[in-house]
Image 1 (cartoon, rainbow, N blue to C red):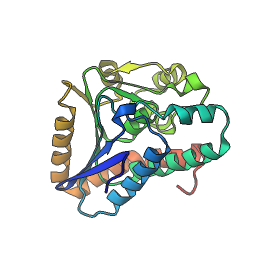
Image 2: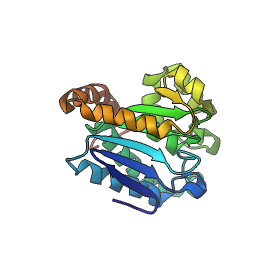
Image 3: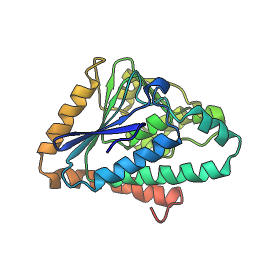
Image 4: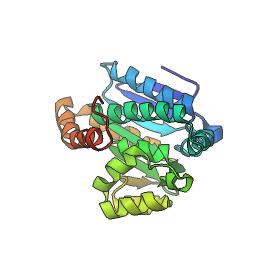
Length: 233
């Protein structure tokens, strides 16, 4: 499956999902976010898939939501807020509930929506010089739901609160120290390493990988539905 803004490549039992808007540092406009949900649904329907790698084309993983969306949200566009909330709900539950291991390959910026996607991945490989942040606070907006949900479990409540209240940049070395990512590699090696990890996980008995994913992710889904008001998933 392919879309102008999201590309899905088949590599045997792996699927490589690429955010494909490099001229905008893969800033996620509405079309990209819709396409990402559709791509994920197609992957879930493919019983040949054993692992997924998520990456970005060009110099960045994802520079966040497109500024046109941010401006409209800050101006109180309720219709857009409703649609984006639905997309976030669909993507958050799909990525947390999938039995497939999801590995992120990150270079450059992973901001806002990009940081949220990383929070939903199982393993994050980040290139030297890359960074993450959730700067929604600077626009008077709520933090990314997945960052608010997952970061306190990866690091601590105190650290997650500080990062979301300040919106500051977290460089790769600090992100690793805080537990927000899994490993740092030389720039240009992030996709190679992510693919190797995905292949290793795909070669393991699926039942074991599924058991681990469900044990760790089920509490996130339950908390999301309870605290953020999503009883239907």
